[in-house]
Amino acid sequence: MKFRGKSERWLLAIAQRKSLSLFITLLGERVAAFEKDLEDTLLAIQPSGQFQESILLEALLAWRK
Image 1: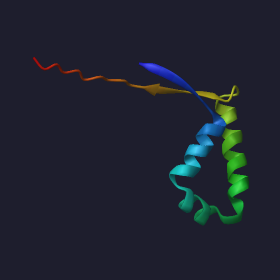
Image 2: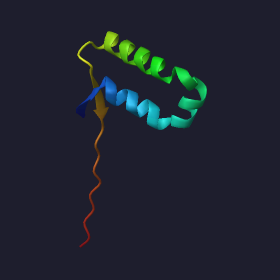
Image 3: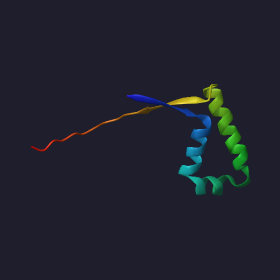
């Protein structure tokens, strides 16, 4: 298993990208306040701003004789 570090900015960007239209529709003018609150919450959880993501790598190999 391999680990990659993720910053709070990266997590915020993914949250926005995955549901951008819904994100904007629901929050409207409050998007900036939500982003700040989310960033503050993530930094409260992990003050360094770095999060670990587990990545499972698999390889299937085949040979023909």
